[in-house]
Image 1 (cartoon, rainbow, N blue to C red):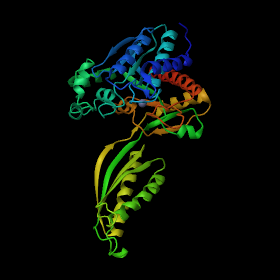
Image 2 (image 1 turned 30 degrees about the vertical axis):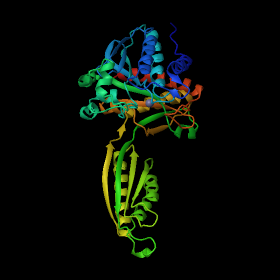
Image 3 (image 1 turned 135 degrees about the horizontal axis):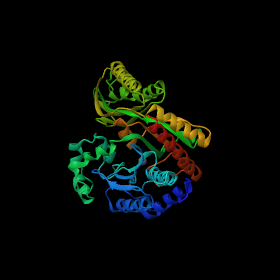
Image 4 (image 1 turned 135 degrees about the vertical axis):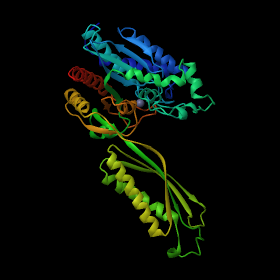
Length: 415
Ligand SMILES: [Zn+2]
């Protein structure tokens, strides 16, 4: 076996996987389905050529371990599962780049690198079937809500524990997978960006700073229904007027926050007829930022604005939290290694936060030094069959990610 990395082989294997597990509508590797199991059997055949031990943990995550001189382990992660009609790169690029890096490291060190190297294929990152993302990684990090997960049911009425049993997984034991992290010293994940930032900057690769925290609320303004003909404008208690002002305000809040984003995703009115002033208006607000203090400030500013608009319009306002997750900043030193690897590969790097959540967020939450590398997405689109990345960018991504793996191995060995 040659000791050189072969990024072109990764691209060939991605196409092979696409042909095996996709159709005219895109990738069909939904977790815990026969197509997903077939994809994993194919992955196993690829790993067969490498002197790595392969096993599935208690949560169904697949691990390939190349034992090193030191038990301290470098982890490389990804997910083979896809959404229905998904793209050809989301998740599996990470895994197959990891396979290529295992091949390179194994050949270079004759099967025994200075530090243990492990590739993990997380089970059910997407949550496409049961509506709950990051299943395998959150079980492993210990953060899976067992009561919530036990009650999950798919569209056909199949319970998650029953679907897991079909794949040899005992739901009540899934958190035993946490022991896999015992010697983990660093975690790396390559992913397509799934957004337009690198595309707009005309850059192939970037170092990811962490995943956004999210504040998600429903905001209900309450006024008084009144006849749209007989009620003078100055006598109205118009709940929609107050809610409508929020539409412009969130753009100012997001701008002041630097890199945060705010979305009003829904708006419903009562009584909702053409001849009545709006009595009740409910909007939802989703706010995201990488910095916890900035996220808290964005939330506070939105609250203050809503109270001001309510006073101005002589209506009341009530807030209800729908969901919250804290930001997961990645590890400063490993981010710097990632930056270096990108710069050495293509001359220039860029640091950016991740809007979507990833398995890396769960690993970081478990206290393991973590970083992600993003490669540019064409169209800035993912979870769609048109998801794509230029092949020369894919090759650069595998090369840069391999450099990062080397730097991380040295970083672990020196600690
Ligand atoms: Zn993904």
